[in-house]
Amino acid sequence: MRTYRAVNLNVLWFLIALNVLIFIITLLRPEETIYFLGLTPALLSQQPWTIITSMFVHGSIWHILFNMISLYFLGSFFLRAAGERSFLAVFFLGGLAGNILFVLLANPLSTGIGASGAIFALGGALAAMVPRVPVFIFFIPVPVPLWVAILIFFFLSFLPGIAWQAHLGGLLLGLVAGFIFKRRRQIYYL
Image (cartoon, rainbow, N blue to C red):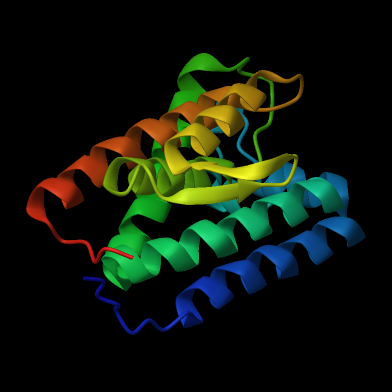
């Protein structure tokens, strides 16, 4: 038997719109925006807000496009599975965990931007909650279990120019959250 939760996607659309708005601002003033909102570990004590604001800054059309598509699909699935409060908690805590790991493990002079840590948190939570749900990945013509898809995308984190530290931090937080939700049975099976 399947149960479905009525879901309001307004919070998801708001986050996507905020990311797009900041991306447009970044296009107009890239250096200033990335310096002011991006997370540079060596500058964190002078710019503490960047531990959060960096989650909304993207450096290219492909960066924001891929992240927002991922946020939409994982976010709408997560909202249906666990609700808005859990979605916001996992998104922001996952982004924060990813950024903390970035600060601890990345070159202190590098700058991290993007919502990937938060998105990996959503993916990790879903992979823990409903690991065998079949999903399609752009370049694989058959559905794969969700946990496999998340693992594939995590391994892509090690390509040059990608903040694997943020992805790892978000993924770990998401896995822990997902196992907690599953243990408490606070999910709706889709």
